[in-house]
Image 1 (tube, helix red, strand yellow):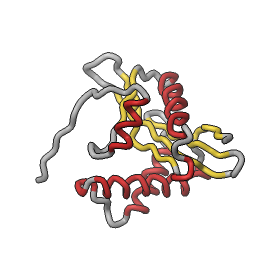
Image 2 (spheres, rainbow, N blue to C red):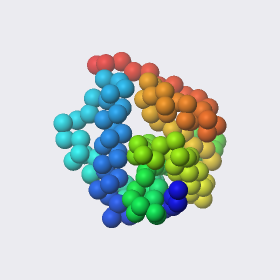
Image 3 (cartoon, one colour):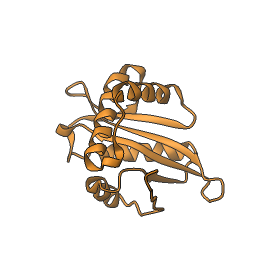
Length: 158
């Protein structure tokens, strides 16, 4: 399958927003503490638009199926300064989504590899991923890609 990974453009905005909204809805299914807002689509559109405008501290890559002329997946990365630690800059995967018909075809792995390359060129010395604790698919994917647990986050409802 001919998949090209490239930087997202403003022309991709609508499809990226659709994929990220699906991801957030899936998170809600996995854990009720990830209850989505009523205006999810509107908020996701603003989020994607802001990300595409911001080029210094975040970037978005898309996997494009050149044979069928459609987006297969998306990955969004934020660069964070770890003020007290080395390496100082880490790349955080905030969102990764692959459309169902492209799953189990290495699209996510390809997105991740290209994101790692870009993050490194932007000065990142490590990469982390953020996802709901109950997402076993994400857990297995990241383990298979060589990720190790870095820190745990606990919560309490207020």
